[in-house]
Amino acid sequence: MSKLMLTLMAGLFAMSVNGVAVAADAAKMDSKSMQAKAEGDYKAAKAKIKGDSEAAEAQCKKMNGDAKKACKKDAEAKEKAAKADAKAAYDKAKADAKAMKKA
Image (tube, rainbow, N blue to C red; front, top):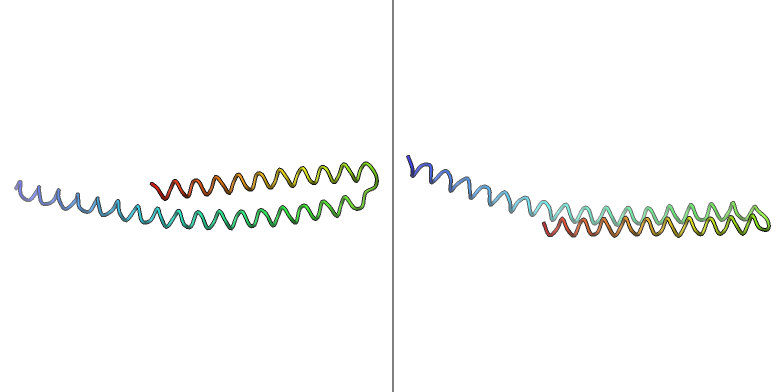
């Protein structure tokens, strides 16, 4: 009976070790897909920012004087903040993917 238990325990241990290796491989694949998604999201965010910036610029062109200057400053500030947010989100996603790869 004890040999049977020992054999079963050894088999379960081997399966669990193999399961950990499979899970680690899956995590590496997930980190690659996370990285690819982060890059795609970042490119999409930059394209949206560019479009929003161009639309705001078009609105500002319709204005005159101080209103036009204020509009341009506001549009530039919004663009700068949006770019910083997009870059921060991208950097965080890259770091998360890198951390997942190490795990």
